[in-house]
Image (tube, rainbow, N blue to C red):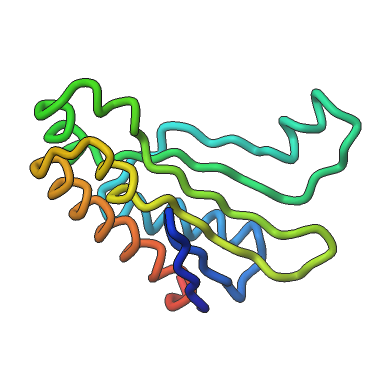
Length: 139
């Protein structure tokens, strides 16, 4: 798996099929305690409202319930920055699959609240660890 650091997250190139990458992403996230709260198939959603044939693109919104509870206890308005967003996609006419994930720490830093930033660092570490496993395992 090749990693690319984005200002607002990470991007990983994965040597798996799109379907297998989505399956492993969900499994690894759940294995690290994340709950998938929303799954959006952008290819399907865009086909409904446009005449565009879009490539495979899934958006997963996830939260780590125990850590999110800590964030919300510290500041209910921080919910505006939740949940974590992950995209799995295959660019048009490509065999390459990518996983991108927003960095929760980058999002929560705008609160300026040290306790929330500390919680978001823990969320980031768990999120990125889960995604790092995807290209490494064989299950």
